[in-house]
Image 1 (tube, rainbow, N blue to C red):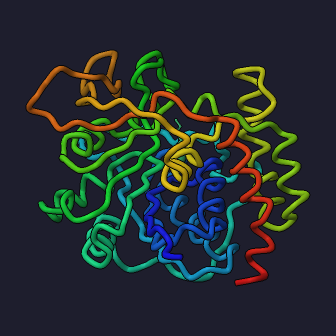
Image 2: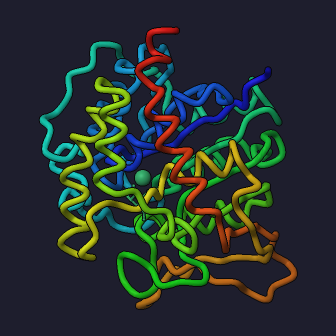
Length: 314
Ligand code: RIB
Ligand code: CA
């Protein structure tokens, strides 16, 4: 069976960690690299955390350090109040041993596009800054790869930073606008669907029971994230934002989409809003409007329950 090659661009981050370990554990996926960006944490923390996730999984997957600030706007503070001071909830900073890849994230993305071409899907689950810089490095990048499946945006629903904007787009709206306008095959997995995909504390306990090593780590890093949901939404669990983008690659039939040009608001109180526009000069993108959230959640749980066993088999 040939595995789908994906490159995950990420700001780990609790739900990023959930998504990355789920991707590592899914036998249908070949993760060719992780590239890092600011957002939930500073980029140096994202790179360190991503290297730790790779080492835990017993893999040799390159991690390339990415942009440390947005494409154009001023940098915001990381979301430590949601993901913890080091990005892994209450856990201290990890100390991975293997160094990062010497290339910048943007360079690495371009190199992977040259190496794998249409076999490669980019899966950004943080701000889109590295993809914007990669488009600057290679004016033909959008024609080389198989597509982009990203977590970000809120096309038909309110944002989670404010009434308008979702966090990944709000953290770098100019980069997102470049990505949406570039003319490649973009699928947006936004809050429109990810807020329906819910995982409870008990599900995280179940994952830890099935896979005490990696599952136990994910249960522990998620505790702080779950407290945010308990305090802000009275929900004992969390949304599976970032895992949803990975599952949209492996199980596309569980999502349904509308197709339209989508632009990003670049000023005013709606900064970072993702809006459908009636503009025939812009490329169309697909944005998810519905999903089979129970199947998606159950697949997430089952895949992560198997992760320790897969580590033994590797
Ligand atoms: O809005 C959800 C997104 O922002 C996810 O990528 C999550 O990691 C957060 O930073
Ligand atoms: Ca993220």
